[in-house]
Image (cartoon, rainbow, N blue to C red):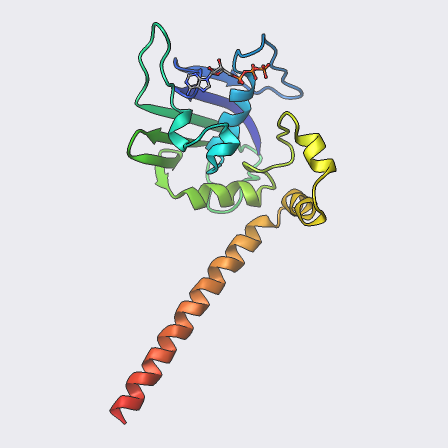
Length: 202
Ligand code: ATP
């Protein structure tokens, strides 16, 4: 599973449709200050399910939508697509039936975010799980923000452990365990209610 292309429309400073080819080996992005290099990395995090506006350097998630410039009006939506080469069929099960996998996230003002994989509507959770199972995702330690190295050096052991767990691909299991625990709790509450009803009938 290899990222092959990033497509952006209306995302932060990338108001016009833009494609970034991610070739084999190293891809370098160079440009003057403020030209949008960090915005590209944020687009990658965002399409993988980032849901903290602060991680996008914004106050709210709609801040990722192009806010307008002197000569261009603001946009009403932002969209990022990530193309994944899955010819070696390494995508997690459920997403593994085609050579190319395209994940698209779109945010519309006053509506919120919607996700698609290969044109089909999916939940944010499905996309987050897909990347967690592939040992990557919005919080992947492979995506290094400015200032993150010093944060890591000063991090508490618990936070460092989370990074190791993400690298090992087990963070998706924690989410599943949490969901299973919630279901179990719901089932226990239902059983208690059934007991009450039986007692009243007896
Ligand atoms: P540096 O080299 O200084 O770190 P950079 O190349 O990483 O800069 P970014 O931080 O990615 O640049 O881009 C910042 C630019 O993106 C600024 O010009 C800012 O105005 C613009 N920008 C951010 N959010 C939006 C938005 N919602 N709408 C329009 N422009 C935006």
